[in-house]
Structure formats: C-alpha cells, structure tokens
Image (cartoon, rainbow, N blue to C red; front, side, top):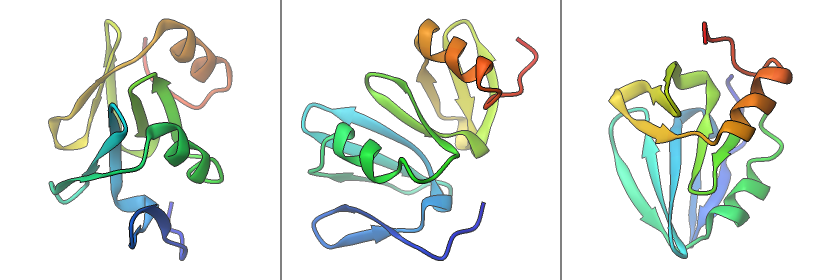
Length: 109
C-alpha cells in the first residue's frame, strides 16, 4: 500500500501511512510506532486519528487502545496480534471476529 498523501497526526506532523505499524492510546495522547523502529508521542487522541485514517483500508481499530496497520500483521495468538518489529497489541474478540468476517485478516486462526 503506497500512497502519495501524508496523514496529519498532530501539531505540524504529517506522516505517510505506509510507514506506521501501530498507534497506541495513552489517555489523550497517542504513541505512534513506525516501521523503521522509531516511536513518538502526539497530543491527538486515538479516536481522532482513527477518523483521519478511515480512508486507508489497511488500518483497523482492533481494541479500544490500538489502531493497527494490517499490512504489518504477522500472526494472531490468544487475543494478541504480533506485528513487525516484534510489536504486540491486544485484540478484542468482537473486533477480531468482525475483521475475519470482512476478510481483512487472513490468518490460520
């Protein structure tokens, strides 16, 4: 998934969506994990970021605290996704079921 449009993530920061592996909520802040291993914090809540990334099909809210790029998904194990860079995130059962029904995840689980 290569796009030529950067997404506004906070303050004056714009990021190409294909470089983001995962976004984690921390109260009213969000931790953004990039494919090159960098991590930074922005003062934008996850709900607002979810709205901004809604136009990108590969992003999905998998838990109240996590927005992930499904292109970097490696595996699923007992309520957790394993992503690139050995990042893990919690996945709610209902949202995982919905992702499977929509055929957005193609895992052997």
